[in-house]
Length: 483
Image 1 (cartoon, rainbow, N blue to C red):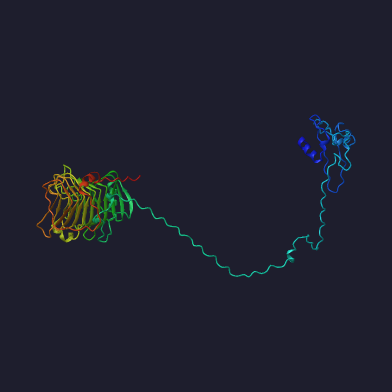
Image 2: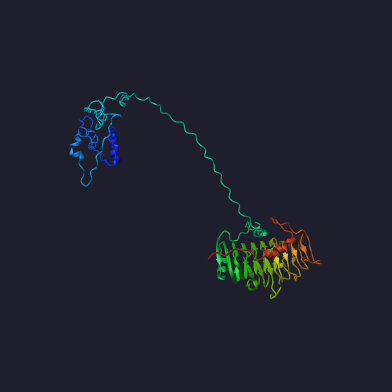
């Protein structure tokens, strides 16, 4: 047993150590007999062996003669004797005899007596309740019955309505990406011009793919990538041809052509450079023939043997915008860029049709005329830049046509607009706020022309050249799709 354990047990014996003097040389373990059970006869107390230092008290103790109390376990060194200190008051004669009635140092106070367990009840005998306990449940009076009735329904708690967030507004399109003009007007069963927006998007990187996709009957948006040589590309209804990637280019011509009883409709051609010197579409770069709702936008068309863009044979609801037209020095022929109506004899199919808007177009070098020349149709030309000094004339109003010419810039053109008269019905041309740089230019006007049925905003003519030098033609940036 450790010293700490011995010290704890000595404290339990009622101060036995107070009768002994403890030193480090005399410390030895003390045996403590077990506390007797309640009701058992207590054994005689056993005093520690103090080696005579306890004034004879240990000599009279039975532990002095008990070999079991002083035995040392094998292999251990016997502990020194523990002398007892006199427990009497100071100044006593040295006797350690306890006073009368006081417990001896070796006595251990007996544990309090516990009440004996109750005798088991005989079978069948009723148990008597303890004093102060409630009566058994069988003897308790029954609880009064509570009437069972319908409970009133809980009031309904209205669920607060969560406000539905408004969708974020789409970013506005730049002015040069908006469809403006006759192609936006409903007519002939078509509400406006959307091209192939209702269908899938495909990629044409070869001429064969472009010809195949463009002629299919279903709506398609065809992304034209790279330089493709295709002399004749026939375009069916509900198509968008859009140049993507760096310098998308077609070497050939587009044939947007139906029949008198089955027009091609709803076509967009956008951001495409067209070298029409390779065209096999009757010498045209873009031929719009028996077609309606066609939008040619941000294209660069040049060097067509006949016309860069021709709109003929009853075609209708056409817009040509933000495009550039030119002829190089190697081109031979008429250099007449754009005809609207092909013949004076086509009144039966052209009258009431050939409604065309041309805006923000750059008519560049090399052209001699027809920018445009028009028969029969209602043609609106605004915010265009005429920079072809060698031209004889720019705009011509011919048989039965009505032209509104406003806010255009004519640079170095001797006859910006004129009327080809002597025919019935007489053409009409109204000019508004145009800038002409040639002081003696021919400016012929007649009649009130017409009022466009669509919204548009015309910029001041003075701002047009700078704007179109950088923005007209295939200048849009559509990234090429990932492979």
